Length: 220
Ligand code: C5J
Image 1 (cartoon, rainbow, N blue to C red):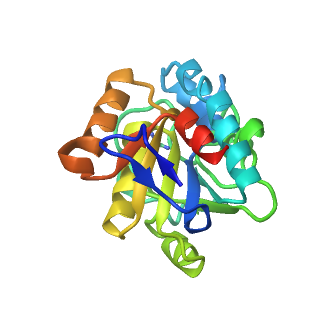
Image 2: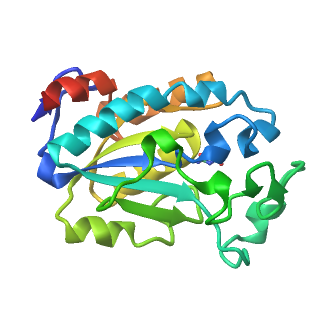
């Protein structure tokens, strides 16, 4: 299959060797009343990508493609949260503190769940990751290698933090990566725009970008 509209040039992929990776579409970043909002962010920007992401997820499932969901999540005892990550800055709530949807970025808490519209189904991979990148301190690379995956389609939040970090990690591990432009968002629109530019600059130095609708057309 190919996505001709991809930038900087057409993207070729085989569904059986490609995974859709949705980064951190968890309630605390996306829903009103969660951690993201307590940090002063306008979460409606992130919430707005849920319908486009759902359409892609649905089509990808129909095509029989592998789906990976990630959550930025720490163990309850925070043993996997470096003090440098927890203590930096001056937020009103830190990782592990009780927030509006349970303990912030702690596995199993209500705010740590994937939003209902994109909830994982049986057979999909769910990765709890303690870092920004999906490959750091997780078994993701090994799980993908075991399934013969060579190509990754990325969506999720936030574009310039966990999505970009994961995509760069994947690129260094040899995956051909494409970022779905309308299935990713940032609290800072300028950061999203800059990330899309960075990914596809210099002949696709990190990978490709394309609208989710282009993937939907390719799958028809
Ligand atoms: C993610 C963050 N998921 N912005 N986390 O991007 O801290």
